[in-house]
Length: 384
Image 1: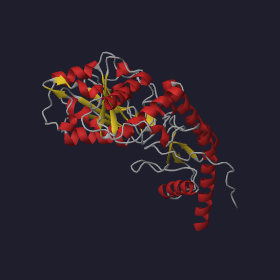
Image 2: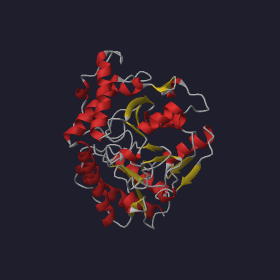
Image 3: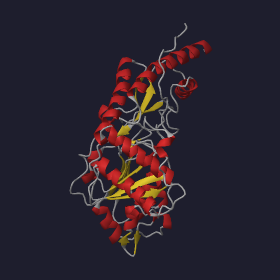
Image 4: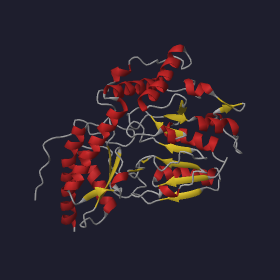
């Protein structure tokens, strides 16, 4: 039978999980005040970098005694700096339930060659957080960007921990409540939840993390791009806008715009509400259709940013091919870009639901998802 296309299309079909959608009010003229052709060490450059740091502190509610630094190489660079500078002083527990957490395991075990305790879970599940020993340093992702599984809260993290908590929060910051008293090192990138431009990471250190940096020297050499201390003391300039290498002042301006937009929608709580509304729209759709479900097994762990879905219809013969065909069809129609599952993840879809996405666009896209599913099911039957 002929399946009619939905009447309404999303105004913005960008649902990529990174780089993510720009804020709805974005256009290039918003960046006209960028300090282009100026040194990042000139007063104008320093002021803008400092504003990026303090705007981050303000919106995320980061304590005044935590250091916030802008570092190279996006979230990856920020995490690597933390791992290479801080680990090795005591035992390490690595928690992983998706691709990026697994990548940090590889770095610690195979590159740093530490005898770490590794706890993993399959896609859709999460490790048993009650078994974590906080005498050790603990490395984990707050939100599994490639699995759509997040930690439900910070209650599992011990207040009297002896080790440090090192948290990759790149698809959680600005969309989820992060309990700063539970986090000693936190990282994220500009191109995730606020839709900033790529290549810049944020490294947030608690006083406990700073104390570790100033009292412990790793056994391995650190390249200049990783160094956070000099003469046994924290390089304070890194956390005041004096970046290790040259930042893009255009990207800085874009981040400042995104922070201003975040303020305009109610700051952190407004951003969380927007992400939750987007995820609820998907959840309502899933509830009404028996051929699709969340990849996350436990509703308490479902991400409200990188929402991962799986097809469950028994008629589907090749899950990977089917999912790719659905995603390709939606992109060809201009209603949903870049929503295929991450390359290492199980077959399915990944819909970005962070706060820069409008709920009306999610709601307009979902009937197209149903249409594409039905078209592919019929195409499969016709080919059989």
